[in-house]
Amino acid sequence: MKQFWTTLALALSLTACAPASDSGSTAMHDASASLDPAAGTSVNHFGLDLYHQLRGASDGNLVVSPLSVALAMGMILPGADVEARDELLAALGADSADTARHRLSALQQAMTERDKVEGITLASAQRGFAQHDFPLRQHYVDQLAQWYDFTIEPLDYHQPEAARRTINHWVAEQTNNLIDELLPPGTLDSSARLTLVNTIYLLADWRYPFDKDSTSEQPFFFADGSEDRIPTMTASLNVDTASGDGYRAVELPYQGDELAILIIVPDDFAAFEATLDSQRIDAITAELQPDRVQLWLPKTEVRFNSSLAPALKSLGVQRVFCSSCDPLPGISATGGLVLSDVVHATYLRMDEAGTEAAAATGAVIAVTSMPLPPPELRVDRPYLLGLRDRTSGALLFFGRVMDPR
Image (cartoon, rainbow, N blue to C red; front, side, top):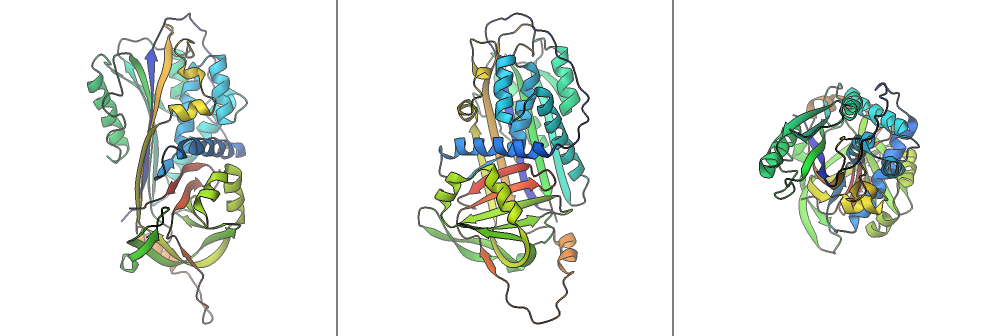
């Protein structure tokens, strides 16, 4: 039995505005790219900045995919004018469009490699849904196809609800029906010309599974001081742990050891979250050391959806939203395109799974004397999580769980 983990979909709607002049094409590049050590760092920095822009809007669960949003921004780059491009590059932490594309392409290729591991399904898909009679620049489409395995599907935005249903149906297919309505009613109207969609779907087995028979109702203490008893998994595990000023952390690997989830339990959640950045995540992961721990982890199921437009504008990505600027001349010779919205939706669930493969790994333990009871880590209050690729360090997903129910 496999573990359902997370799915993510992100859409960018481009809307026609005033006509603009033609713009020359840019050169295409070879899509092959080595994994730049800075690739994960830049994506994580962008993702944590985005997370902090979003966390003030709600005190509930919040999960974002730094990698997916970065890939979506990368799909806009070939069509952006100089000013819009520079804003996007600044947000992505890259000094040139070529650097950004190489990094993002390499991270996407790394995901493809992880998908080859037994017990791991990890898929990313990109598609553009274009007005059937709207001319796109061929060099723009070619670059996206070359770098991001991108295809175009024609539809008719003059029938916006039918177009919305078509896009949502494709997203549902890519995400095992876990995200069935990325675009809510009224999202599209007849001014739409192109919707760029990125999805990430992950299905992963724990390396060390939890025994269902050990799951029990345990107290969980919420941020408002209330509590409830919720299903909580437990196991004694040999995993990497860390502790420092105001937190304890544990990292749980998936099959193949290339992917893992970092669980951080702060003593003071609000104070810790307010100062959290990508450098502190790196510092925590650097402190991880092998240990045996009795872990108590609540079964978790959370959803999140939001427009990212206000957050992106606050991070300096503003020109692509400017309706009087013609910021995206590289997408169509007709000009007059502007980014109207960025819609983000995530789903995440943790339970006991992967029993077969993980049970074999968990049995390889030699005990030569009566051991002391392992230290306990009870995840019984709001916590932070970061699902990351261990080689690149890139965060596929990062978020907070205020209520795991």
